[in-house]
Image (cartoon, rainbow, N blue to C red; front, side, top):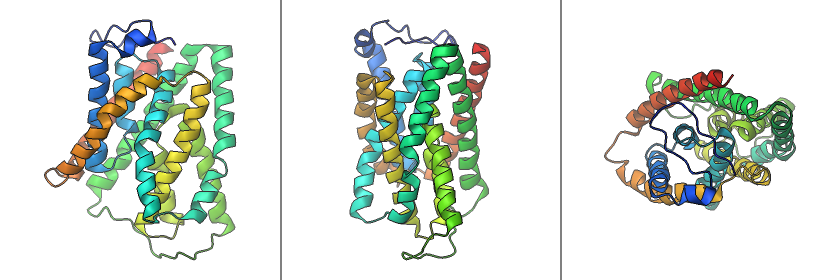
Length: 294
């Protein structure tokens, strides 16, 4: 696997060309574990999915955008699978909504993979990297602004749902909304590996007609499913560096526990605002970098 340095700062680590040399380099391994720890703490403290915080530092380390996408999808799956089990045990899932969300996932993500392969084969890795960075940067800007809106501009962060009904039958319009939204989210996730949670939650809040815990549980299960499919497809394309993901998970697992322990001592809202600003700065950097490649 080839790792391409992003020439954005003189502080970028000198990455060995051989993958095994890379992941077992002490400095780089410590950097990966530290990133995983940071993201794990953020997940434990604020409930963030972690993708928006994970992608920028990996890119800054010099890992190519294509490998970052595959690594991120595998990381999301590894961190969310345990949460999905807990939600399943608590029965916090609206299966009717989830089924409609899952229907387009596989065909749409396969279609996105075909486009990915076509662009790379016919236009080169630089064009593909540019597309990834532009899409990723745009999504992270939206994610950051969405987080700021819901944690700064709103005094109450509770879900505003007018009616809860476990027996609600979805209308044709609501079913179409789930199918259309899932198709868009699946395509974007396969290309940019982020934004699924931020984009899914508002739709579930408005259309699910279920309690907030069911909204959260359904979103987590959908995130696990979409990241699993994406990981498999990217692995087949050679874009999932397994050892790199393992180092990230080594840091993230204790990080999550630490974050949960710190929730009573640190304001999650203030942290989310801080993370939002960091993500916004990183997103602007990624967009600038994309234009530099062009």
